[in-house]
Image 1 (tube, rainbow over the protein chains, first blue to last red):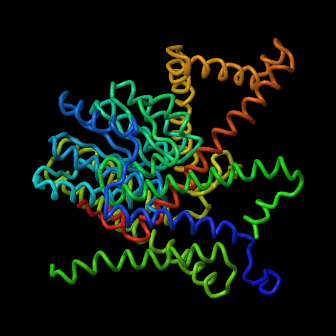
Image 2 (image 1 turned 135 degrees about the horizontal axis):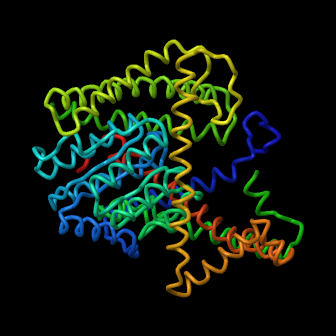
Image 3 (image 1 turned 90 degrees about the horizontal axis):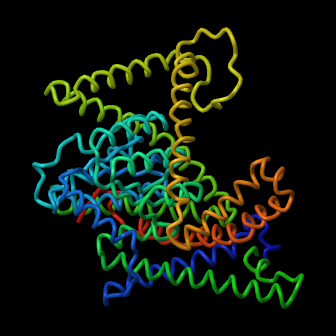
Length: 263
Length: 229
C-alpha cells in the first residue's frame, strides 16, 4: 500500500502509529504475563516514602493531605492522581489516619469523593467516612491555591501528597506544606512543574514513575505487569535513539530513521 | 443491585471508553472522513457532558454544604458564604454581555462598561488571583535557598549550574563577566538540560501509553468507576 495511492488516508504519522502499537503490545503482553507469574520491578524511593509518610502522620496524630491536581477528568494526570488517591485512602483507612482531599474541579471532586467513600467501605469503616474529608475549595486556580494554603495552615498535615496536573500553584502548595512540617511526595508529568516539586518536596516522581505509582503503592500484581511493559517501551525508545545517532554519524545527511518514522 | 446490573455498571463505561478512545486515536493517525466526523461529534459531546457534570457538581456541592448548614457543622458559616456567592455569581453571570471568562488577564479592558459580571471578574477576581500568584516570588526565593544549600556533590553541581544560568539570564551577568557567561548559560540549557528534559519527556510518553492502555481497557478502574477493590 503506497501513500500516493491513498492521499486521503495519509497523515505522515504511520511510523508513530506503529511505535504506539509496539508499546501497547508490550504493555498488553506483560499485563497478561503478570496474571500467570510474579514479575520483578525495581524499588522507587518516592513510593516507599508514601507509606513512610502515612505511618508518620498516624504516629503524630496529624492528617494526611492529598491534592489530585487542578486539571479535569479529561487529563491523564488527574486519572493517575485519582488512582493513587485510592491506594493512599486504603492505607489511611487501615491505620485510622485522618485524610483531607482538596479539589478545584467539581467533577474531580465528585470522582474523588466516590473513590474515598468506596475505600472506607472496602476497609469496613464506612461509618468513619464524612463529607468534609473531600473538600471543594474553588474553581479559580489561585482562589483554590489560597484555600489549600489556608487548609494546610489550619490542619497541619504530617504528610502532603501532590499527584496530578499542576500549574503555577504547585510551588505555593509545596512550600506551605514544607512550612507546616509535612513529608511531601509529589508527581506530575508537567515538565514545567517538576523542578518546583524537586526543589520543595522530599520526594518527586518524575516522568513515567508517576504513571507507575498507583500500581507500585497498591502492590497490584496485574498492574505491575504494565510497569514491566513500560520498561520495555523505554528500552525500545533507547534502542531507536542509539540506532538514529549511529546512523546519523555514519550516513551523514540521510536521516532514513526519521523518514521511516514519518512515513 | 443484581449481579447483572452490577456487571453492566462496570462493562458499559469501559466499553464506551475503549471504543471511543480507539476511534479517537485512529483518527489522529489516519485521515478518514467517517472517523474524523465521529471524533468531532465526540468532542462536542464531551463539552456537553462536561457542562452536565458541572451542573451535577453544583447540585452535589449544594447538598453537602446544605447539610453542613442544617447540622451546624464546624465552619458552617463558610458553607453559607460559599452557596450564596456561587449562586450569586451564576445569576450575575447570566446577565453578562461581555465575554468575561477565557479572556486574557492582561487584555485591554474596555472603559465605560457597566456590566456587573465583567466588573466582578476584572476588578475583584483578577486582582485577587494576581495577588496570590505574586506570592510565588517569595516562595521561589525560599525554595531556591533550601535547594542551593550544599549538602552533597549533586547539590553543589545544582548550585553552580543554577548560578551560571541565573547570571546568564540577568543583564548584570554579562556586564560583569562578559559574553562568555551567556555562551555558558546557552550551553547548559541546550545540552545537558535539554538531554535530561528529552529523556524525561520520552519516559512520560511511554508512561502515558501504558496508563492509557490500562484505563481504556479497564485494568485501571478507580478513576472511571470509583472502585477500590
